[in-house]
Length: 390
Image (cartoon, rainbow, N blue to C red; front, side, top):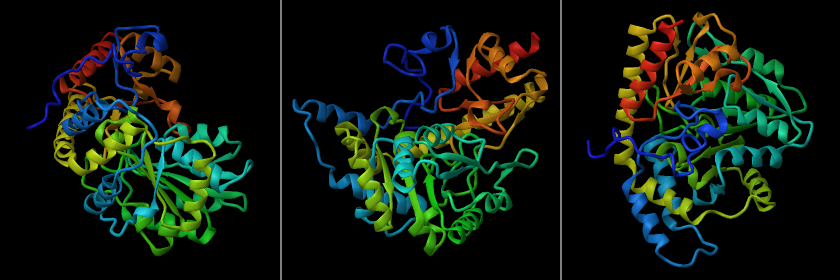
């Protein structure tokens, strides 16, 4: 391998949410943090060099996007995801994907309107809907013995005149599903018939660990491309979350104008370093990503084999996309509060508890696999030891 994913990089003194704030948030400082979704890997070297070169210039005023910012993303969506014909004008900047669906909520609905989500799901969906005065409507995923599916019958029943959109998580965080094209077609058809928008959070689109390819929701039908706002970012793919840069791809000119108008109301200006990092990452980062994916698949294999051999009483759900595994711990016979306490105080693991993700998350924990394998091994050995001492 050309790139090093094994070396542990000390982040404790670098204002890392995962490492620096450990004691402040948990009251402990001897934990292994596998919660928040960033990687403990060094980023693409070309990105680092480009940022150093830009930082050497002494003026950091308002900046314009490079042409490579757009062409890099356009070519990336074509090559990696088969979305041909994305146009420069379709791409609008957002300070992040979470900010992106908050902007979309405010641009396309009014306080009191209803917005669909599919729990258990990334918890900022719920926070942003509530925070903007809209109503959450839940269309829970169906757990069929360890494999989640959408409940299309329930979805149709939940939509009424006040329902304006669905926020789709694709690939789905935290359950790790990569939705098949036929599933997305069925979803898009219901949205067409009921005339609701699709806000498709595709931030994990490049992190495919299984055999199912990612399908961009907007590409599944002629209607879908006109009613879908696709949110993407280099942040998860290339470990650039601290640079706050994302994009909304919006082919429909009316929806695009609405999004742009909402951005202009106060979402700020692009970050010089974030936009440059996107340009360089999409144009030069593919070799790094390919090696990163191979390493993540190795971590997943190690994780699955460890549980199968040493902790078989717990159910590890299949991970098709993202680097976040979803594990069920009901065999411990604890409630959710006791489970979190056990993980922190006994196993010395700082994880995201399943209840954060809403309905269906009870007794689950989410593990971040994007770390050096030695650290992952230590974390699992901690867990094994704690379980054996019960």
